[in-house]
Image 1 (cartoon, rainbow, N blue to C red):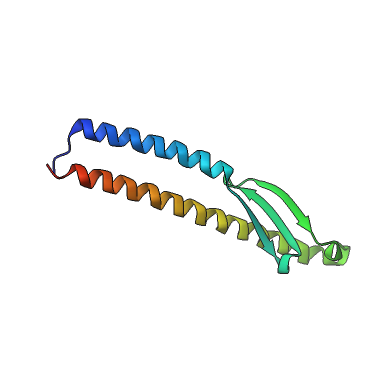
Image 2: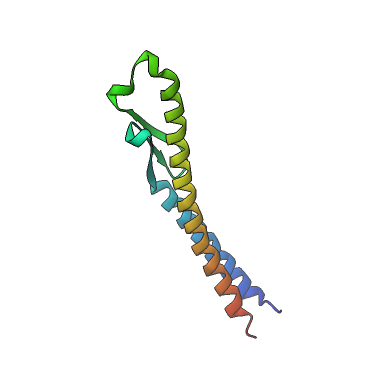
Length: 108
């Protein structure tokens, strides 16, 4: 397999541009994780920063403290899974583009 250095540089520049676009897009992603049938909700961005936590009023009682902690943890984990899904989808698209770019250059 022979790779033309100019094509390699061109593809590397394309990859760099796609990664920049990917990072920008992920900063715009926002997800809501839920637990307890929506009694606890958390908002998280694509950088996996927690932006908000909301509780249904009925569960905010001292005797519910342990349950509330469990629900917050479950809601955060739900949001993280959603972000991972977005990341995986976007990265799959970039990898596919790179693979096709290199395979089309291999026809020399």
